[in-house]
Length: 369
Image 1 (tube, helix red, strand yellow):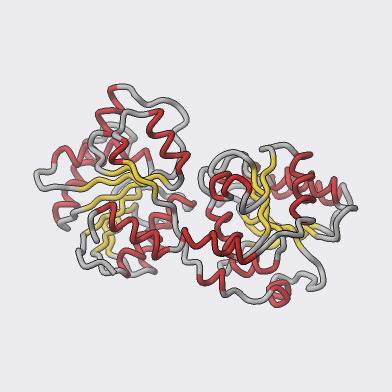
Image 2 (cartoon, one colour):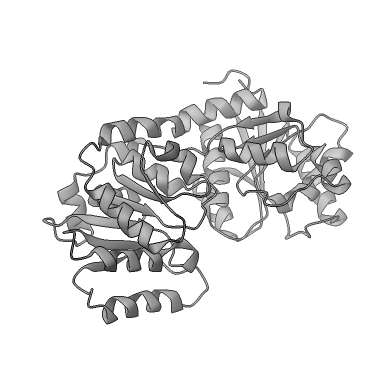
């Protein structure tokens, strides 16, 4: 537990509810529990606002801002930080960097600005505009080494102010989930069957159709059924989900493929399945991969993005060629037939992402320890 308490503001002007927003809220909750003074700066009536209320965190409101040079909203943020005497400001969305860098440049009192990277950079950002903006950042935190390499190679940000801090999870609920038989009953699945599973919103980028095609190729070679847990993207139609169900019907897979609505006790889903598939083309980090590891599942993931490093280049799971249905099918078979698989080894490897360990790294990086 930290003895040097800080006043940390978590800025998140997004109305979305995805991994970025969840990680921002989770870290705020944990740091508050560890005795730091925490302020959530969010848009009113956003999902993260509602979740912050449920977590009993202090809240201040901002409006949606322009990506660049939004002076009016910068003034509003400046006043909030001054009013609450904030010492540290944490952002995760690159769209918030222009605004927060502007505010930092106005502050006479020291403000520690930390950027916790959630998305890969993609293209070089060594131009004068980005370089000047990044100068205002005191700490650039990357969840994996490959993302730190991007910062070093694609920006002029000083490497000595760049650290690697993974996104974290409270892993105990996965370690102590219900047994597999009970989990299958809770999901209304046949307790006698084994299952391949994928969890995530029904979206073409999540790769459910790719997995369906791969499963269809190997269905006569395995006893496993396939189960999807998720829901359609909020505010969007169910076109993709309908496409998946049409595929199932056309290929006579109704008895082998099961769709289940998303549930908050997601650890029950992992407890019910034998093999988890991360089918996204190139997931930047992939919290679900860590959840599956903590649950002792066999993991099959694409060989691009952060999944490669989370699975330690194949030591903790099986990698397939991204977007290659034939390679996914072959590697599903390899994973299922791997007699050397050790669930305890995979669960042990997941502990580096435990919330307490991650918070200690955050406190050390922010000098709040």
